[in-house]
Image (cartoon, protein in one colour):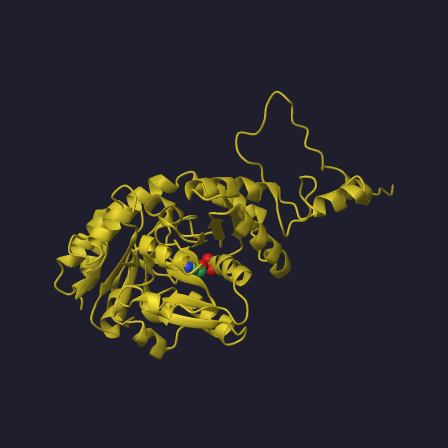
Length: 393
Ligand SMILES: Cc1ncc(COP(=O)(O)O)c(C=O)c1O
């Protein structure tokens, strides 16, 4: 007997029959691209923001909104938006607020691909003037011009783990009517909340500590004004890098343990940094938690709860030594990422491969640096792994 299934397959299973006396304990996954409407008038009213609802998955989704609620709260912003990668979020935050002929001031030490976005895309293709400036040692005030619109930096700069006074940079930026955007990927809101220190927008590679499990790519923007997120969402509707609801759902799971994870990352990083500082094969240990760090007192002032992050960099004096240690580590893997549950390392050529050698030299990024993302292992095992590898130099 012939049986036809297609109409049932395409029309059933869209109603959620939830008894009114109860509701789901956790956010359901709305793996949904499109929405149904009763009539064209309702759809039009929604498009004009006259009524509330979901129009299309490229702009919004209920699971993504559950994630946004958490993110806005932990950064003490007014609203947030989520994208499919950190670079997606950074591009949206910048492209929404900067146009051809505008000028931006960027710290010269930032993640390599962010540097390339400013140099190769905004400056070379889209006619935005870009000044790469040493925020730590130079007077950034002198770089402002009439057309300066934005200042961009990282709260803990990749890969030299430098900390710059966000309060001071925010004050100068606002005196010149400019927005301050801070990439808070290395710190997370558990360690640093740039909006509370004066930043207008915070961006993240959610792929790293915020997710913490190395299984999704994610990008986050939190802003101190709802209107900024409305504008970003509108521009994002044209560019299209929205986060998948499935990734949003996974990220919500990850965030439930963010503080617990971060406290362990930071505690392990502190002990590992103390070990590196006392090791004769390590030329320099870069970690703001060390009392000897030139940014220790600043970090203590602007970071939360006596935490200094899970990222430590060590200077091994040469690229040869870096490669030697990487090859001899057993537990710790070379991974061109960071912020996961297990300890990983990355060399400067990899993390900042999007910059030319000349740009890396100008930014003071030596090939003798090894960037370490300290994981959640028992810290004695992390230290023993590095001790064994360093002894082989
Ligand atoms: C500080 C920082 N910002 C942004 C990014 C880009 O994030 P994603 O890889 O999620 O696009 C990275 C990636 O390593 C990063 O380290």
